[in-house]
Length: 130
Image (cartoon, rainbow, N blue to C red; front, top):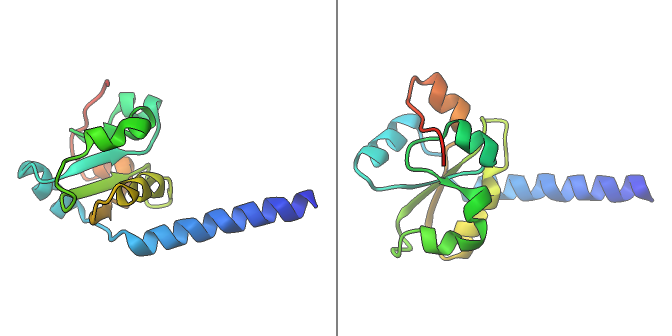
């Protein structure tokens, strides 16, 4: 019974992440950089507070600390661009923040699939600290 329960939990999580991926289009590094430069994006980092403190995309919100008050940290305009990201293209944790933003009524929620690793690999700067 324990193995069946574990399997069902893993299956449900995999299904949820696959569904989330279908609902949140990807944004490229180039488009994300442009949105940041134009101050037309709110970023949500889902890597955890320790990783966030070590380095995050400038201007990002730490989802781990802002989760319960995320609504207050997001823009009033429900059509504003919201981008969630996590560690890299193999990480699905971004879906928690993206789903939360969608649940709050945001209609333009996207996923930066390269994550913080891809941002750094592209030579982009990060901010450290909280």
